[in-house]
Length: 419
Image (cartoon, rainbow, N blue to C red; front, side):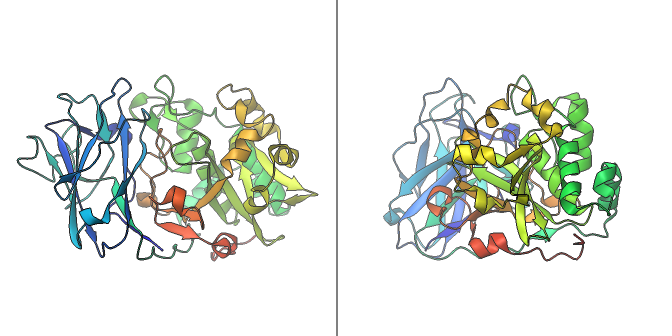
């Protein structure tokens, strides 16, 4: 058993990180209940492309071995800690490097905290403040720094949360859906297929890349459907509109027709690029959650029965390819050289199925204030609203929610359910 300690939700914005130097140092306080067991320190950071400078860290005033740079993107770094460094109560973690200018290491920070337990120094640690933070000194926030102790226990994952069926935004989204999706006389699977095809053909998959999408689209389906097809978003820039936004749009769109939907995450290992973001819809007829990949207008069918995520996990690449049905809505995506590698033999998709998770909040329309700030903008998974499959703690220990098979298979408890 183990327990994660953190003070933020992982809603960091990569373009508003904290730059670290020998003068500009970050400090984080974490209150630990016990310290008799081994510990792991996790932090999300980005190293500059040409920097070979290590990151320096101290725990309660004792400097530990420096961390060598890895990826030039916001990814998780993991450090094993000697429990003798820790104390019961507040523990002080400091991070800095020997650079004179802001061109070596960036530490992720979550804005929006009134009185953060994270602090910034501009004079090498002589004085500290918990305001005017971030590289532009414009907000207060918590550094994305966490610790897991090999004692204690993480909380149980929260129940799934869906949109309020009476909320006007759900009715507004329903008006945008294609006619077959709104036709209550059709079988549910045909209505779901109509939504998948509509989304798959609505816009071109745009990943985070400096020469392409740089502005993260909010998790608002109607805004996604306005920004992505026009390729114009905030400040007139081309928005990121990748697999995440097909998944979010689908999960909310099916709710608009009375079918429970949720966001599903797939990943090989933390910090790798073989993850994928899809959706699941509740098949009342088959009494199970079924996976759909609206990015490619792909459904997964065997003998006319939609397959659950758990049924897909053990399949080989060839077997997975055999049960994948791509409808016309995916034709546009199959012509996109940046994403076509997902499709031909199913190998990359099979690798991504190694670890699965769901976003326990599926109420992006009803409660946009809980939506991630920049998910999809070239960062590893950091949000604490993700529930990973039980048994992946060794790989995803920087997260706090893990669910068993019963959690993932439980039918939706939602007053809006009609199909």
